[in-house]
Image (cartoon, rainbow, N blue to C red; front, side, top):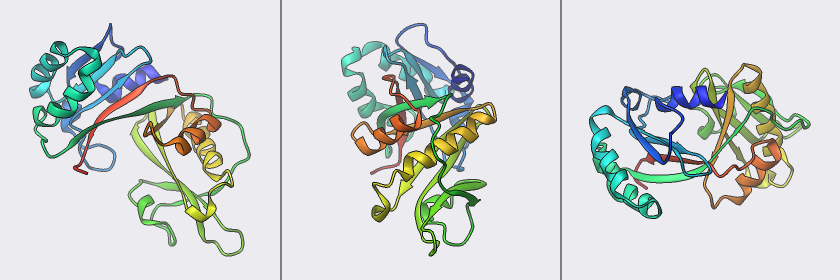
Length: 224
């Protein structure tokens, strides 16, 4: 399921070797939340992958990648990629890219609720459809939640957050596992991204059935 998803998401996959730059109209279309993603890439554990950009920026970005030694590529992309795709105010970042086609089987947590239901925290409201919410028994107070980013019918990304007072209960891993099982049941691949320094998120991913295979996400985000 992963390869078809990446071809749909990036416009091309796999790479014959190294980081291949492709120009695709996908990078000029709104993403799941209506925002934009002018540069998006994935690399595997060997550093081979695809970086997709708008068609008009493809040649300039490809020249930058071809002229830069692999060990210096992240720094070069951080310095020049935003301007090359017409978004100098944005920043380049990398993260851990994980996926699962066989989520861990564990006790479920939470219930699916409409994202616009009462008592849903603000960070979950932009997600379309339903979100998975764990609440305190008796009081109904929010403890943790999962939102789903539908990158297409073949791939859905999971975002999870836990209230500070509810950490240490294993809620995040149980919510992620339940959400991933729902995604996989539809025939899609479940995606989990996190910052390399976020060890808590890494532990959740490991426990939920998202192994770290050394893959990375390459993307742009708004100015910090």
